[in-house]
Structure formats: C-alpha cells, structure tokens
Length: 110
Image 1: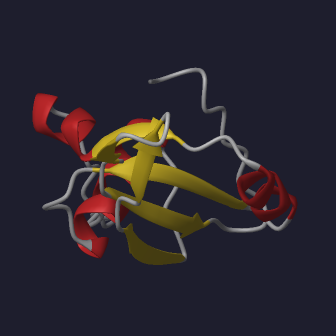
Image 2: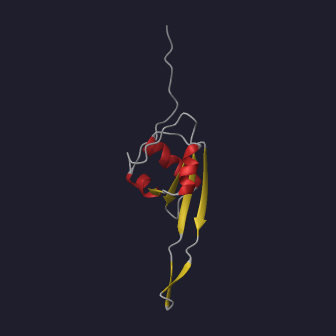
Image 3: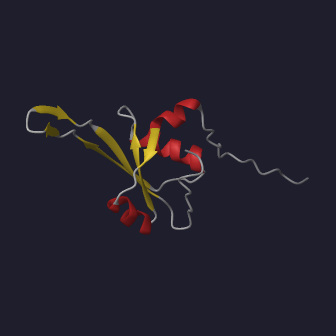
C-alpha cells in the first residue's frame, strides 16, 4: 500500500491586519540600489516587528524573505519661512532581503 505524503508546510493567508503592517513601498535611490541585490524597502506600522513584516511579505507577495532589518527614522525639526517650526513625522522602515530567484511586483498587491 502506498503512503501519502503529508504537507506540513502551512500557507500564510493575507488578512486585513496583514495589509496594515506594510504601509507602502519606499521609492528612493537607496531602495533602487537595494533592488539590484534582491531587496525591497517598505514603510511599516510603528508597532510592527521583524516577524510581522516577514509574515506580511510572505502572505501578500508569496515570497519568503531571507532577512528583515528595521530602522526608525526620527522626524526632523523644520522651520517654515524662518518663523514657525514643525516636525516631520517619525517613520519606521523595513529593509527586506529576498531569495535570488524571487520576483516581486510591488504594484500588484498594494
């Protein structure tokens, strides 16, 4: 009698909360240089962890990331016409490294 192979790998499904973790892709010179080495940059929610970002990328784009780095860019103080001052918003960024064979279309699922 032939034995059945059991697939123990669970497929991660994108839920409404998953789309809240990845706010938007970052389009900049650094992100363009990162994409040459199979990486991508996202602005993420302030309460997101590396594991949350990895799960969200896997669920939305069907690509398992190899590495996730997170940076918090503090908002700068700017002056407007020399009189009033204000602050830019603080942003949390995630730099995601992908496998060499991964193709990620950022415009498809955002």
